[in-house]
Length: 470
Figure 1 (cartoon, helix red, strand yellow):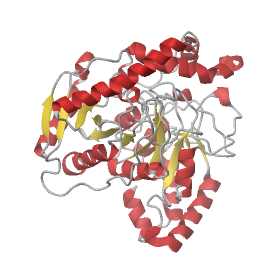
Figure 2: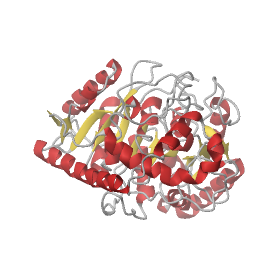
Figure 3: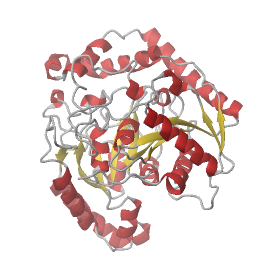
């Protein structure tokens, strides 16, 4: 994305030309027109495409770039995919669900409005696991291997990026939904501090867990996109007051052979509580060694044990039911696994249990902050996921409602419950192999530190995966 932005600002490329290149890539890689269920041999990243709107916005971006030059926003003229949770006034908004057939958004999501006002070009809405309530997005094929899941719930955004259809996308993260597809598609993301970017105008899953966030090929691209998303300020969080103003995030690696010198990175034993595939373990070990080679000090200590799966249930399920109770008369329109989840959520209506769990979440954040301070550590390093891309096709079947015990969220959900910012980046593997991924985690408000360390790692040590084969 930043490379394209530089070409646009130098006037070596127009927004109209960039959009046309994206359209051609979509024609080549999507596997036909967008569909609800997705064919087995198709990527099918998109729910809907908006060619006329995109063309008009691209022309407006070119005019703005010509008038403002280097003063134009960094993201001006960049094509964008929006997860089908983000409202765009006057356009359909369906959460990739038949429950919302015919729904048209009456408002712009705050996140989209901020990017639109900075000149980004809306290509279309990307598929989500229905209502963002799962980690597989089975109507979408992974560009690396169509028989594999692209992850979820932001699977359409991850697949569109991995296939090179767009340079930037928005997803959301409730239990891992930015990081899971980024990990399984070989792309990057930054899950910001909870409350960093307003969620107003985004279809909710569980508002005190929901995070708006950027997805792109590189961490630096994500940092530039997050800067634009956060520039107009945060919103109050269910965990604490709004984060302090973000400012401009770093988008370039630090120079020299030891850019991580002075940084202490902590590992912990949380991955030992789930079955970690050899590829994920090898990726973590490679990144650990890279951190040391780049000057970081590594410490390893047992993690604090505070939150449990019950804490997830008593946060997540009451909030799911608070939104989905309105669709009781359309229950037959849900896919089976999502209906099971919605039905289960009806049993979680004890207000005292819900309030007590919210208090435990705030305590957990303080416990993790204290743990880092005890280790003298700045960041945490973990595998993003303990497993690789699962086979595609069963994620909506009965018995696949996800949640407690799901390996796709085994490591990610802690950082939604605490609201900590996370940068997830791919660790390139062999030719044609889907990369594994690692995550760097900071305390609330630590986006700049986590982004800089991830950029340094990506640029100085890891590099980027090759593009998937056509």
